[in-house]
Amino acid sequence: MSLVETLKLLSRARQYVEQGEECVLRQRAIVELLELRGRDPLDAILFLETLEEMQDAYVAHMDNMERKVLTLVKPG
Image (tube, rainbow, N blue to C red; front, top):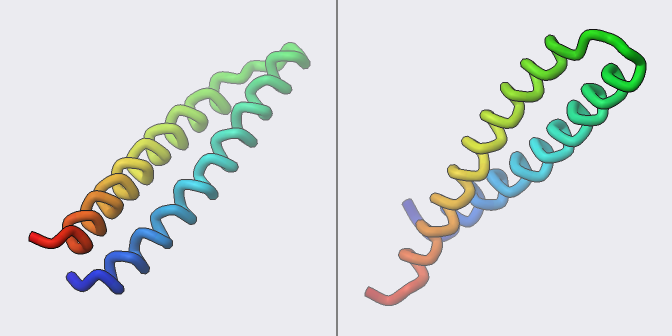
């Protein structure tokens, strides 16, 4: 894969990480609101856990892309 292609993928990965973090923060707020209102937050917590797992995968992919860029830029 070329440096240009990898940089494009890295840019997309960073966008996914940013968007994922926003989703996680919104879902945490929903869980907190449900708890404050005395409602059952179980489904919201389970969804939050799913979002956090997805976010971990996005971050790992972004980290891999960053390492790939470094190997392509670094003279060998």
